[in-house]
Image 1 (cartoon, rainbow, N blue to C red):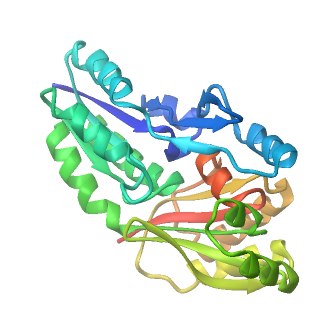
Image 2 (image 1 turned 60 degrees about the vertical axis):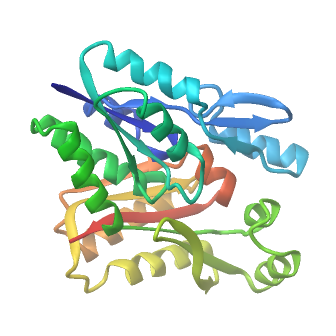
Amino acid sequence: MKVKIISDSTCDLSPELVKKYDIEILPLYVNMADKVMRDGTEVVPEDIYSFVRKSGTLPKTAAPNLSDYLELFNKWHDKGYSIVHFNISSEFSSSYNTACLAASELDDVYVVDSRNLSTGQGLVVLYGAELAVQGKSAEEIKAACDAIAPKVEASFVVDSIDYLYKGGRCSAVAALGANLLKLKPRIDVIDGKMGSSKKYRGNIDRVILDYVEEKLRNRDDIDFKRIFITHTKCNSETVKNVKARVKELCPQFEEVLETTAGCTVTSHCGPNTLGVLFIRK
């Protein structure tokens, strides 16, 4: 049976990768000023920046509902496909539980909890898509992706914690102190949950290069198939310098892929956030 790979929109894969691997994207919802829009099609990160500037508040994201999942799953099920669907970590959203509920109503629909977000999730999606090309069954893909998900190493450096403060993820005192000291927190995704593991100090461009160096230098436990450089509105020179540093530190990478983070990471972290994301052996 043919296998269809589906992911929710938090995977942050570029249109080129989505097309190359024939991946279907199911948008989450973004609520701004009581207007509900679909992530990536009706609302993009620039809209979020504009909304925050004007309102001083963050938009809210919401999972697809049961009917969204059933409509999409039935569409491909009726065409004779088995389905593997990938979700943002179940620790971040109700998406996974809703997708599992929809899958229980059909045969040959498997749901993978990526235990991640952004291109951390995207790495698991691409892993599954490549297995589908190889002719693996949906059940085999699900098992393999469940096994690979804990090996994804995802982290980001945040320029300003204003968005984290507006989203209730740090106190006003912490936000004030971080801004006064020019602290740049590193956000790591560990066991499906997001937390700050380190704080850098100084100019964001220098901090980002220090972070990349720290994540990649002298590592022998990395799967060098691909690495993502994923960012929110970083300037092109910064990204160019990061690419050069990645290739200098780890020339073994077969693919160094740049993507712009979508609405979920944008609404959590704000502009000038950058991460390097890859899979460990």
